[in-house]
Image (cartoon, rainbow, N blue to C red):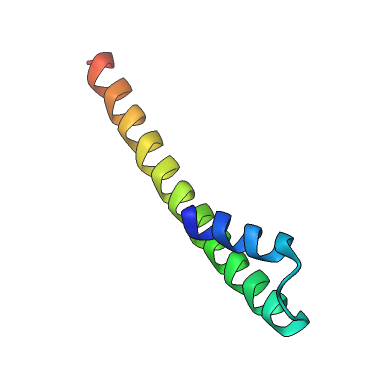
Length: 59
């Protein structure tokens, strides 16, 4: 998350060339995708645990 914030600050500074800005944007998109993937995996794990917990309490 810190890397993403750093990229945003660099891009907002206006000191980057167009090419540098594009590379920073691409890097940011990759970071966001990884974060989304991690969140999705965590959600799946939580849902699975909740289902297991519900099954345990039903018996």
